[in-house]
Image (cartoon, rainbow, N blue to C red; front, side):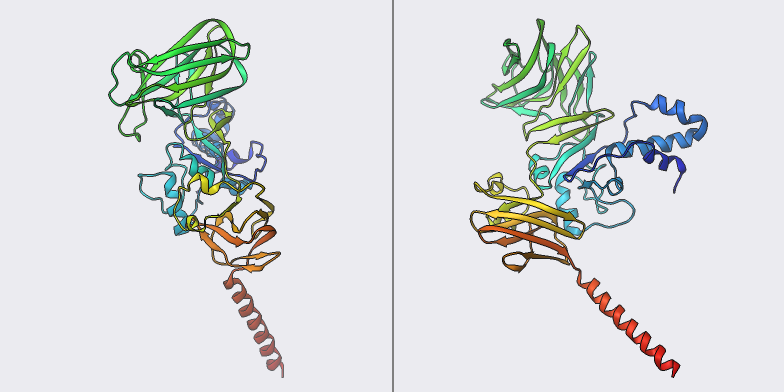
Length: 426
């Protein structure tokens, strides 16, 4: 179906600026826009209830860049296409790793199947620099917002350091957490160190029971098994200090403390700053509105060098050491077009140039030094070519055999038609 309001919902806002890296979005679309009241005031008399509903749905789809909006704006999305275009079998198989434990989506659409942040190694391999999601599973406690999309588990000897960009002048800090394992009440589970940009320091001990279950403020989403209750605790200090770092050290030798979210707050001015808690990779929150946008800070480039040929034939996840280039090696994309990609590569020793685009019949590769190159399938889905040591330029071009066959058939048919016309005039 098509209603005017849905289309208007796409075009009444300014378009985004194109970015060459990929992104991934996931949302159930059950959130309400923050300006829902203003939308109803502005459009209800003109569009009616049904039109406003369509407008809101279209606006939410635009917020998360649901299929097929990336095509409209020229974005590179990992998600599939809506509208009946079936994906490749290899695409379905490899993207199913982004939502493990669920029934495979045959149409390739991911945004309503993914419920939690995928593992960092998959985000890196898929060249996913930005992740968009909603705030449905986040919490507000005592007027303070807690971002619960990531989280980290800490055991004895494990440390997480959180840097607070530009500092935040705080009077306290709050934690949303739970324990995994049988831990007696009163047991120290973690040490928290706060470092201010003004030289101020403070240490706190988080203890089982009093800090992890004395005050229950929610529970893990239904898709998390087994269900865990979220415990909430806070620490306050006299005065206020610009916090620059928060260091968390695990103390448990049996079991683990799972920190789902933490926020700094300033009760004097009713301000707060959610902290990005992650034990799987560095992320940065670059936007927070109706939806959140995270930047994956250790994402792999679209093209890179790998020296272990056997590793390319295995399935993800990929060991991190396989992806580390030798000193002085690099691969840089110079041209990126729908049917042509040019990559400049420098290898210290023979290896493989990997381009994390789909392996598909019709793609050909040519090296400036070696001429035509065979393309092999990397990790069951991507393209790779073998190169000797040294500097080289590799051009990937799309020349499907059926297209060439079609040209030959069309040319032959045209010639026969011309010949038939000439014979007919005699």
